Length: 214
Image (cartoon, rainbow, N blue to C red; front, top):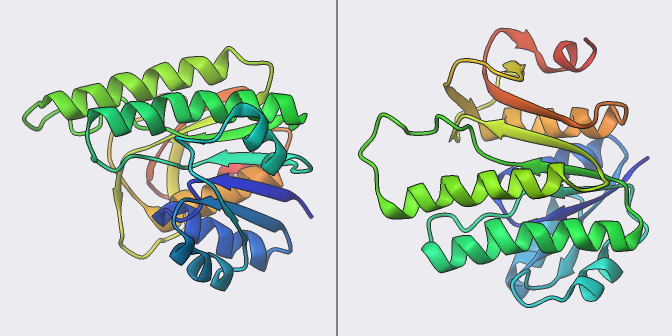
């Protein structure tokens, strides 16, 4: 059993991940900002932890993370604007990395973004800032002393997951379901030897477990 602390615990991927982890006998905890989100988190088998990522100090977040085996960062601004993106996807990630190190939690999984995401669409300032901030966050985590994995999913969909993916250091761009991203993260929790690697992720033809067992 692993104690897994999920930052951004009320998000669409995090909710799915909590359910999978709980079903596998792990003990997920989920950081969430709004009190009314606690019931949904509890229903998925996770312990709700109230806290605003934009207001917590490193010491405060470290206190909440303490005792965990793995931190999963799945928080995101969700298109709420430049300032919120910078605060959550940028400074929030840095805060979580620093807090994990302070709490003595060695392993850190980050849900990032595929570098080719929506590059064929019309560019806008907000999205370009998002891509820039996510890359800076990847760099910050990779420079840390943690055992990290950066997952870069393609365009996310709410279709039902197939359990079949393509994953690697550099793969063609595509879509992937949130179900399959969550399942992939759960497999990473179950494979603690997989560390210090960036993995791009899309729908594909390989079973998730087979990818992890390579």
